[in-house]
Image (tube, rainbow, N blue to C red):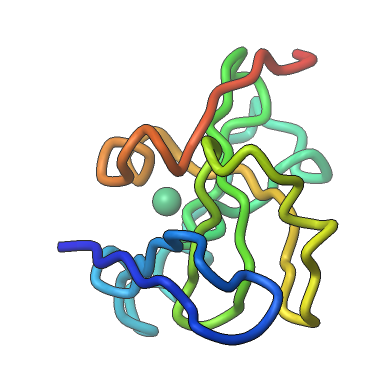
Length: 120
Ligand SMILES: [Zn+2]
C-alpha cells in the first residue's frame, strides 16, 4: 500500500504527499531492471529508466505516464490537484517531473500521475 502524509513543516506544509516506498522494488530488483537488455530497435541514447523501478522505458511509446517528486528516497509524490506549482514551493527537496512505466503507473492513484503524448 501507498501512504499519504501531510507535512507539518517545510515548503509542502498541508499538502497531501504520497509515499511510494512500498511500491518500490528492492535495490536488487532495481539493479536487475537497470541491467535489462535494451531491444535493438530502440535507440539506446533515447532510453531512460522508470524512476520508480529502474526498468528501461520504451522511447517509441506514444503516451507516457509522469509523476512529480518532491523527495529522493523513498520517492514521495506531489498531487496534481493541489492547485499549486510544486516547484514554486521548493524547500530543497523538489525533484521535478519524471516518466514512469505503465506497470508502475497502475499502482499509483490518478491524483499523483498524469499522461502525455510522446514525441515518437
Ligand atoms: Zn517502473
